[in-house]
Image (cartoon, rainbow, N blue to C red; front, side, top):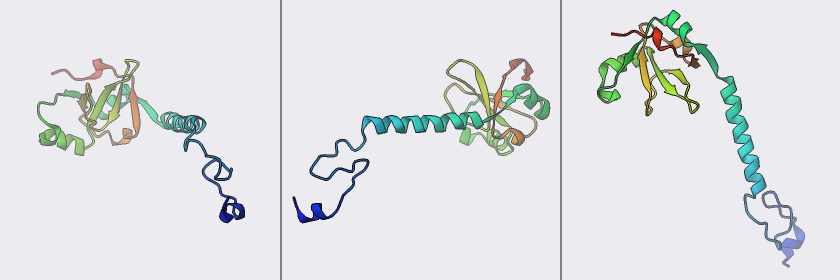
Length: 140
């Protein structure tokens, strides 16, 4: 044993054993499980903090929307870019359970639908829109 090891008590990670005993894995299964629990709780709390609003309330405040079909790349579609800039676009997505929900703004996702409203959706910006009723959408 070297003089340095006898003089100082070294600590590495979660282990307080001296360096003659191998410390084992840097991340034991216990610490990985703890990390997973902490991350899951953080995600769950974040989901609970998201405010929701009913689709009927959004239609009442912002008017009847129209379904917008992407015929070209969104970055090249001047009309769509104008609507996004004016906060009039809502992205409709399907959750894993099969129910539909909306997010204010343009989120390019596979299988998403887009609605364009006559008035701004700025007041619903950080809300999850639930209760999508397709009967409230304008048909051409």
